[in-house]
Amino acid sequence: MIFKDKVVVITGASSGIGKALAEEFAAKGANLVLAARQYVTLCDIAQSLEKQYNIRAVAVQCDVSDEDDCKLMIAQAIQSFKKIDVLVNNAGISMRALFKDVDLKVLKQIMDINFWGTVYCTKYAMPELLKTKGSVVGVSSVAGYKGLPGRTGYSASKFAMNGFLDSLRVENLKTGVHVMTACPGFTNSNIRNTALAKDGSQQGETHMDEGKLMSSEEVARIIVDGVAARKRTLIMTTQGKLAVLLSKFIPAKLDELVYNTFAKEKDALLK
Image 1: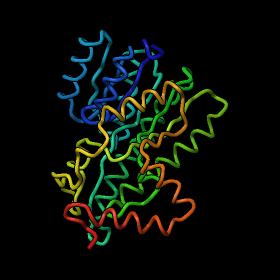
Image 2 (image 1 turned 135 degrees about the vertical axis):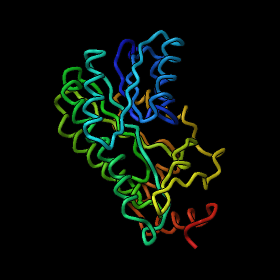
Image 3 (image 1 turned 180 degrees about the vertical axis):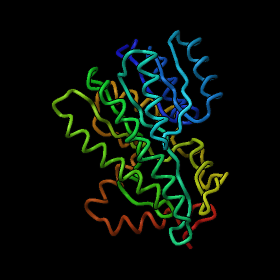
């Protein structure tokens, strides 16, 4: 029970991996600060976890693309619990559109949420994490190692997140702060349903066989175990590990493999 009475802040906690992380940390005795835009949903989740696991959970409405929201969310965490032990930067959004067709506002929105949201929350939590020698976690993606077609903005944001976390890790080699980059495979969550189409609207449907994907609960268990072991990087699937390996040794061949994979998805963008 190394998380007993620890304070864990989770962004994007109202659904998917974030919600599963909240339950996994709560089951291990952690107190929680749950942040997302869906405040009513967050409150329901917080109340349910408090009753089930006898922990404290605080819901905070927060749009991570807004720096002031992030600053206030972290301030509320400190006010409520007097410390922060773990920050999980989980909030994220995806896209599905070829670059030649996409409105640039889509790429900006994705970068604001996925990259800048991570930067803002980490910046304001850092003084507390230095005191507790705590953990900063970024929920990234294999798309942060290999660019994916139809996901230019998403891949760019995850490459940026990975570079940010890598630099932060080196800066904190001697401070005791732990920095972990977690890269799930394709996960059965609502991230594809809320993914942005070329005009910025939500696509509303998935183009993958969700039954063959990782579950949010499986991803959450791996991340929580990774925090406990203070892992550096988590690449969670064989497919992901292979992609990272091939990108180093036969990148041109990997381009072909990725192209062929995405050309086979439902209503493929690649013809």
